[in-house]
Amino acid sequence: TLPPPFEVPAWKLAPGEMTGVVQTPYGFHIIRRPPLSEIRDSFMVGVQAGVEQTFDSIYIARLRAQRQLSVQTSAFAAARAALQDADGAENNTTKLVAYNGGAFRVKDLVRWLRALDPSLSSTIPGATDTQLKLVLETLSTRDILLQQADSAHVTLTGEDWETVKAAYDTSLAKIEETIQITPALFRDSAGSTDARSAIAAAHVNAYLTDVVSHRRGFYAVPPFLAATLRASGTWSLNSAGIARATEQAQSDRASYGPANGAPTPGGAIPGQPPMRPAPGPAPAPGAIPAKPQGAH
Image (cartoon, rainbow, N blue to C red; front, side, top):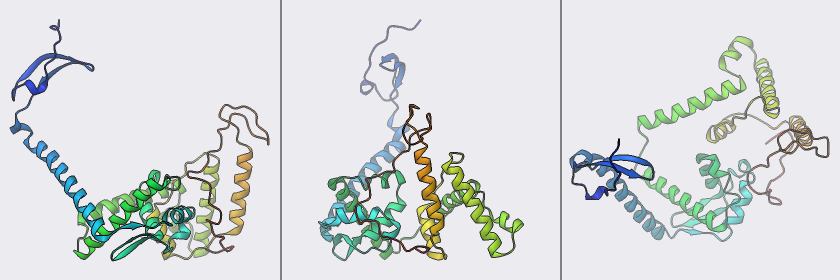
């Protein structure tokens, strides 16, 4: 049988002292106040982290003041328009933020967003001017800090590079597993370039068909890897393939019903989940430039 519960504030305990049974909203507990000698290391880590955060905030505030960092009045509209077609904005030099010694441009914003969590990037187009201003100030400040690191010849350690490599190796393994295209497949199944291209195209088409049919999930190529592949390889858009994908999407949209399974016009299939809109607002008029057929 437990003794009657009682409350003893931990701060009233002497170092090393322990309470009896204590009742809290979460149940019954026994509380011990450890002496400083036992928690000195972890306590110092917490204090050091707080001090570093304070000094970092002071340094960044001074850095922005010294560089006279200023978000341009046209930055919000330019950023939103560019993000409707991030690939097309890779080389957009429109100035978003000005500061002494440089500028933060649309192409820099695109590069940073590819490095951030996709869930954050998808919220940018719908952000308010106040929120977008904070994002631009933060990212342009990071750009300045990277410039300072380069000037000071600060480099990644071997351990840092191993972490980056491991992350990309994991992504590549996942892509190979998802699309079912591996170096071994080409080595064992085809000798000529045309034959390898045909095999790759067949696997990609099968994968995309399965994605549309919900037999397989979609797995995106990491943004930086995708940009590197586009920059280093020869590729083009296939107008026939785009037309086929558009027709398939229109057909799928017509055959999807509401979540409750009620009949809908246009031949929708009851019980199918509803189509989900893409994240962000609708494309701004003129934000997506026309691409020539068969090329990018």
